Image (cartoon, rainbow, N blue to C red; front, side):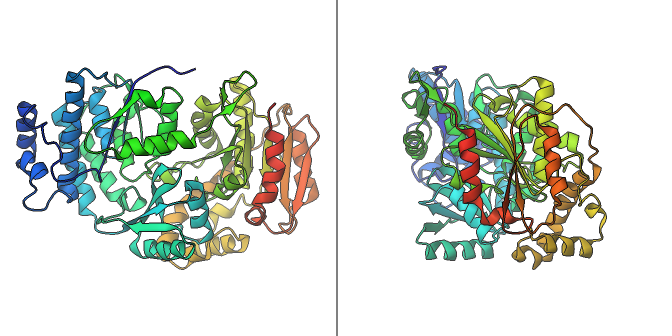
Length: 527
């Protein structure tokens, strides 16, 4: 059942063009004068005439779009359009959404945008690549397959339009490989790798800058690019700073909104209609499942926990093989879209974080799956769900791990010296060969991997009453797991244990996604 709210969408960088804001500057002279005082230049001249060709310079683009968006929204209210119950902004546009929700005033928002533009423009490393015609999941699988771990997906704009961001040489390689696959690509005319880990220095400076401001709780529901969920009133500064290097999860954000309202109750303000076209595309590609009464019913969800060093792309290939399931990998702090957050090294802290991620998403039938370290984490998550009295999963799927009552063979891996540590990981087979070639990439990933192996080393098993849910175990025949260690999973469930053995070593899953999907999907069917 829809909540029947009204939605307003604000565009971001890329919507700028000479002549934008025509008709608005004369209508709101006080706003324009205030903006000119903050900026130190004539905004009207920049937008309407652009005599020095600065409108595409990030330092000028972002303030110009923010002001035009704000004036456009104010103009729409004066013309009798409703205010937004749901407010979404694409990247920079999120500042307008927060302003419209009363989180800060017009001048404060402009000051934030000016600083953001300056910091983002300062970075001269990296590039961005638009990819059209394949899904975000297909792109995630491509990055994994081609060992392009240095690239991030900056924008999930629609099901068929994404943007990659990262080092220039990796962007060029990705472009070449995608063109060989006859995928449409275009290198963007930007000076840096926005919404990627290369923006971490800009994010850190912006975090310090934001400490000088106070923010109010939003009066409407502002959906954050970073999480595709509503802003929390006490996390405005943190969310804004993380947005600089995090992915713009636009598809998820729009779908969150469309689950609560309809397209005919949405309007785009500002210059152009790019978000309206995206909205229509996302709406047309969103086909809800139907229950017996004809009402909409969400697809069953498979929540996944990554192995050591993994991130939200770890199960992208599995998602491709499970079109009837919503496959969601629970991102741990310190990697992927949460790269700036402190790493966690205790099982309890990680499980609490995972529980926070899924607590509001248990409105559909779901199951849990984890490989290696992830297997132990989803097991512990099952325990926490039971303690909280929350809806139980349909099934627990695990792979590459002994039963939790058996101490992990990797409990001392975190203590190895650096060279021995990397050699051990190479033998396990989980590290892309491309990563081992670059010392800077190894330096980036080593703390992440060590934190994950510390979780394995610090786990102490406590016996509990067996769970009343089925457990299925997947094992690689060459990974040297004794049968008794695998069978130890039986101690954790009242149901008969189901075990499947596949050719391969510890990371056998990468060659058997389709086989895993054929086992997982039927066990999640709901009539």
